[in-house]
Image 1: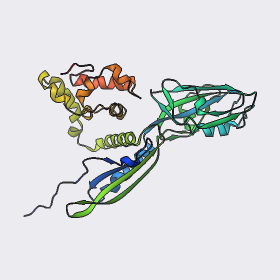
Image 2: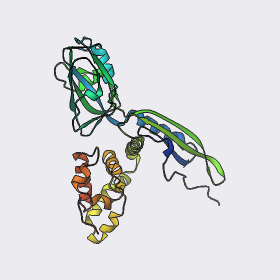
Image 3: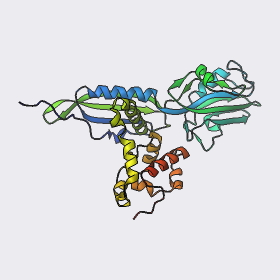
Image 4: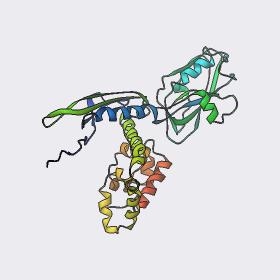
Length: 324
């Protein structure tokens, strides 16, 4: 009797449209999917992209001369409510775990923009042309901004409940998500003579604190972790078992490990993205790097370094190895 089972068709790679790609926009295409899978995958990615990615935002502000959000500040055109509304639009990239405090201090007639914020080594301001306030002649403007890491959206009430803020700090609604907009469509794709497969087209707009490629990669990692509990226990336990087995491998098998891609290490999405930015694709390329080399990579912090060192240790490897 004939069998009607078949191999499930899934895409092998994700295509990016280079001609329209920017730092905050990209169009991705994945094909072919089995019929119906395009909407299943597309909707799942869209929901996670919009709700669950980590970012940084201003969560509280202290403005000299203002005891509450409904106060007016002498010599400043905007009241505190409008200043807070402007600060909600500030987009920042937090390099460490945070929180961080940034300062604004100036005198005299001036349009205060995000470029007037005193940055530190752990915070990068993306939209420096953002107008915050207008200061009149002879007046001064001083403010402290509390920057924190989070995901999704939190109201000022939620911020107040979660954070022990110093006196005179005003909690703010915080939009942490680096993704501003997501749109997907499903088109027909051809495989052989059949044209009823799915082609998923995914468009992502970000705020500039992360690239669309980083956003979709982090989202895929979150989706993968979310479905892990549905795997049989023995299947979910395979990776830790492989790590333990790697410790027992003889030195002669090291070369085989070095040829493997860095995704085999199962790093967090943050550490994995930093390696991609650095152009490190294989474990061999990674172990040739020193700690200083990695820390010099943009957005690469001590936490990611410690994670990588621990994973390499499990494999009997280390950073800074001399390999022919």
